[in-house]
Image: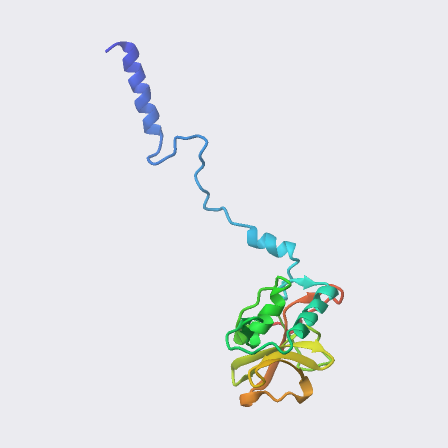
Length: 200
């Protein structure tokens, strides 16, 4: 073996020894970073002007009014347990979910879960605002929800009436002994500076 070949082989062994086992030799490929975090959800919230106290979007008065319009358009829609579309029927939480989804606000299909969201509002129509959610239940169990549309009126998918109906809050007597448990506000209106001091 010539001295040249001996030096060449020595160089190869030295280089090989300095490359960790499993390391990539392609300089254009980069190992994935464990600190890389997707910012897509945060960006989506930012673009939607999320309300940290909401916890959903801050809406304009016009958008808020469109929620009210959407509830009225559904009056007379057939009630169907677990229903989430007007074509097949709506249950109470499906009705709420459908109305708010039209503005990109994704709510759970569960009266119990809806009762935990947003800010707590006094059970008084003088404090309530159009778009607030009214929740009803028995004991600690929440099983019914409707949307307050102003002027002392709630619109909800009623199982006893078998359709979406408009009801005066003061005259509403829920079936099955349900009680009015609370009011939740799941969005703010940018023109009013809505606050949620009682959020829990």
